[in-house]
Image (cartoon, rainbow, N blue to C red):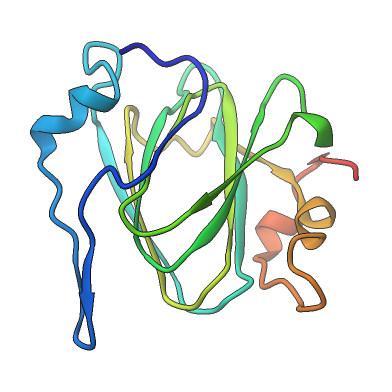
Length: 170
């Protein structure tokens, strides 16, 4: 399966949790069931942990020649995920996905990605098809846009994510 657009796979892997924590086995041999590995060759893994509810991370992307497609696995907590095409940054083009443990989201390199935590203790795993390149790294200021999904609660956002020059207008 060759994917050029974002694609959500609900319950792509099993999530077991109890009062001790969680266990999420993932058979890596099933990855071709989700995406063609001749076009997506894993090159880097990243783990992201957000302790607090209403933490916003994003919208991030890498530009040419170091674009990154991402497979995002949700291991704990719940998020509202945001993606937008980097060549058409308008509020009407933002796609949102509700994700919970066991879900897998594919984000093509032509999209910026970010998420808002809906719960505490959110753990995500990213598998990317290119390494991080600081010179190609960029982002989109989506604070005003994302704030409408946070209700009355204040967002927890890094200074870096607040200060991207490119902005999504509400």
